[in-house]
Image 1 (cartoon, one colour):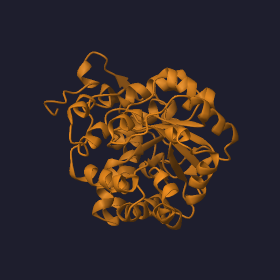
Image 2: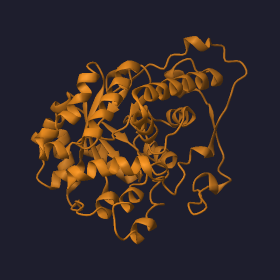
Image 3: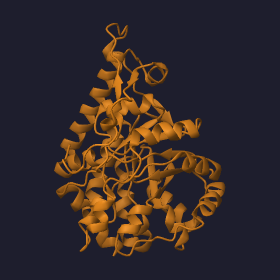
Length: 351
């Protein structure tokens, strides 16, 4: 069942509208241009570090796939792009490879194509309540020679999908135990609902090394699961569920000021990325735009990444930030708090 679901999720995301009914909230912020950049555009430096690893740009190809022939092809393309441009990459949940070892290569292919890349392994946090322990998490890391393990928290998705794993009781205690013993950093990741201040504090206390916001505004997993269910009534009611990405980012940064953050969930442009970094993130993760490009061809994916990096450099030039450190220190954002529509769009009208 898990094996079949992997391919279904990819096809649904590529063929159907699975957009959240909530806007990310980034439209509430405006980037302030400067007429006097005092920098050379060609000297703009996107280099950054994350969990001790150097990246050529603060960009993550977010966790998406693995466990199917299509997933293997896409993973190879994602990894090649990560290697070429010096950005990070995460794989989809590796539970399927733990249950079906013959599918291991659909994940391990990423290290083949990104021998020097910064790669993140991935397993659902709830699997710690379903017989998976530290040894299984280590197997996920070793499968792709990852520099970190992502534990994704997907309560809503599990509640809505047929046969979902919904026993989350006591999960924080098991995450704490894992973090205490694990040989590489553990990253806590939501999958479209965002984290609250309380979530962030509890995860920091548990020992996670970073948090991936993955707020509302991008792919809605209730919308994805809706296409796999004979009765879609409940799924529709949750399409506008979650904390907008920008709001969750600001909340988590205030609650956990020192932990590295990844901003993801509806990131669609260089403007979103720069806003996310200015609001306190260290990396920005994108999934669906890269998925659609990679499904076309490796060339289309490379072109998409190149375009994004050019956009990032141009924005930084136009706000007067020569590098990532300068961006963080530059007061480049204005916030409009007068219009509530900047945080929640009307799903039913499609606007």
